[in-house]
Image (cartoon, rainbow, N blue to C red; front, side):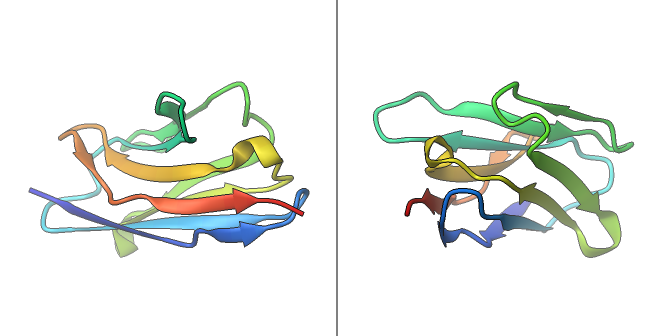
Length: 113
């Protein structure tokens, strides 16, 4: 069993940056694959980025080159660094433990001028 607590969302202007954090508790973290998803109003939830227990990463084409997923196993935390943000990045962002299929509560990211 694991609990995921997200932070770092907010309002940012186009071209700006945000860093999302997902802190895990209640279970072993360092062996889990983790992912970030997002869902905009009226749209399906989509996969943004994944990271394995060994640090291998994958990204959706829409964010490749702009977003970076990373993890700090000593802090039981996974991050999503978002640069060069666009209005179409506006969504609720969710952290997920892919290995055990646990979701975080979501955090709102709004990109607007």
